[in-house]
Length: 90
Image 1 (cartoon, rainbow, N blue to C red):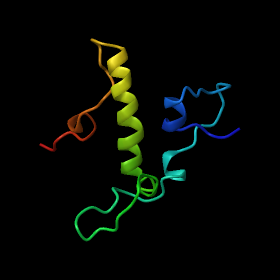
Image 2 (image 1 turned 120 degrees about the horizontal axis):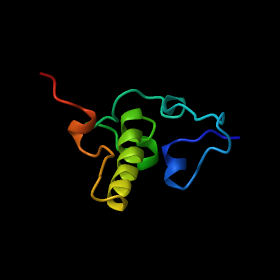
Image 3 (image 1 turned 180 degrees about the vertical axis):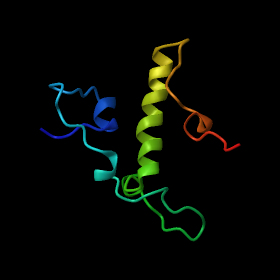
Image 4 (image 1 turned 90 degrees about the vertical axis):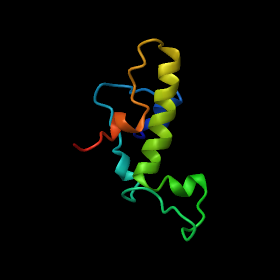
C-alpha cells in the first residue's frame, strides 16, 4: 500500500488500518528549506518547487488548513499564519 501524505489526505485519503504507514515528507521532498528565490534563481514550475520541503509544507498544509478552518468556523484551530508555525524569537 502506498504511504499517505498531506496531498492524499486533502483528496479524502485515509489509513486503511491503524498500522498503515504514513510516509515521511522528506522521503519525497528531499531538498531542505525553500526553493531558490530572487531574480537570479532558476525558474521552477510548481512540481519542481515541491522538491523543497518548505514549499511542500506551505502548499499542502496551508491549503488544507484553510479549507478546514472555512468548514469548521468559528473554531479555526488549524494553523494558517506565519506566526502559527514560525513563532518570533524573543
